Length: 202
Image (tube, rainbow, N blue to C red; front, side):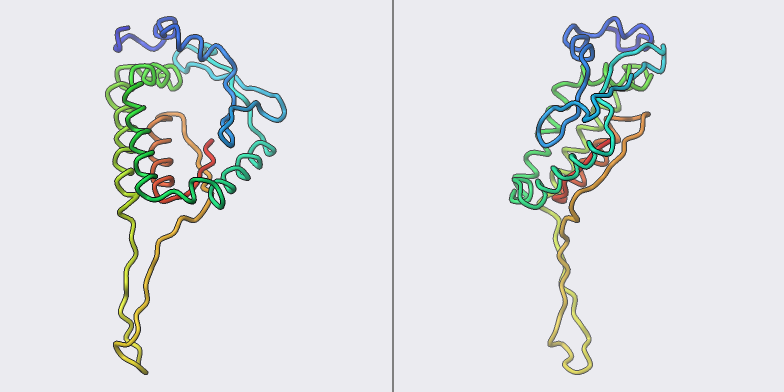
C-alpha cells in the first residue's frame, strides 16, 4: 500500500487481517476480558474522509463504567499492578512501546481511517511517537523518589526533618480525543501507569 494514498482510497486496501478485525463488532476491555456493553448496544465508527462505516463498537454506559472502575480499583488495591515493583512495571511499559513499533504499519492504517489523516502522517508521527512515549515513561518507573526537608523548628533547631513520598492516587479516568487517538492515549496512559495508577480509558 502506498502510505501517501488519500485516506478515502485506503479503506479497501487494508490488509486482510485488518479488514477481518474491523469487520467484527469491537467489544470493551474490562478486567482483562473483552466484553460487550451491558445494554448490548453498539455505535458506528465512520471514516471522516468518506463517511463510510468502518466498524461497530460496544457502546459503554453507566453500568459499564461502574464495572470498569471496580475492576481498576481492584487491580490498584489488591491486584498484581499494586504489588509489582517499579522495575517490573517499567519493563512492561517498555514492552508496550516495542509492540507498537512491531505493529507500526497496521496501526498507521487504523489511525488513518479512524481520524481521516493520511496514513503517511500516522506512520511517520502518530505511531512512532506513541511508542516513544511508552519507552520514555518506562524509565521513570524507577526514578520517582521523595525528598527530605530540613525543618527550622524553634524549639529544637536542626533536630527534625520532614519527608515526601510520591504515591499513586488510584484509578484515573481518561478521555481520548479524535485527532490523535493513539498518540494521545499514549500521552495519558504511560505516565499514569508509570506512577502505579490504574486507568479507565474512554
